[in-house]
Length: 229
Image (cartoon, rainbow, N blue to C red):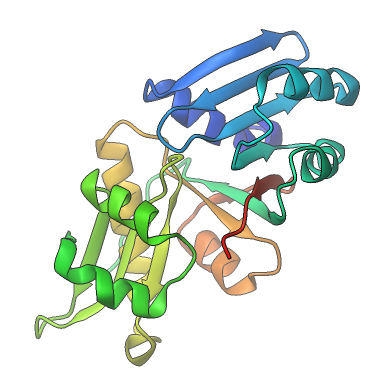
């Protein structure tokens, strides 16, 4: 089983393993990586002063997305890079086989006609980002036995499972677990690390991760990004 710090690092490992991450700086204290797909700058370092030096030297001031595992570096980046939005998450990683579950949904790749339905209930990514996720083939729709859409799931540009949403009229049927379970298996089949991030305080989502047998970090991942008007 991975130690807690290894669990927190899987986002960085994901972009390196899939070949979209570039190591900009690395030594015995940590690593600074840039991902070409999400344009995210990811830093994991045990020395705050050195981390600030690396950030100032390598990360452009107009960047729009930074991930750090350090609260002091989060606070520094918030001011130095004028990133006004902060998302604080636990990380959950699949380290064992998924439990056997009934599968009542048919899950298929999404297409352009599904965007209005998705955007009507999900606003955590921009339209441009949603379309890029769709273009990359990383977005799926779940249909019930009558062929009606009940929800969707996908993979964020930086490599984590996300965009998990069950339509309001279709909740309390276990569809969320089916959608996430499908996506975790899909990620495994793609030789990707099956992981997701859960915002602190989201007890419902944390309970779902535990139900699926995910290992949840006790430590935190900090995302900073530039909000849209």
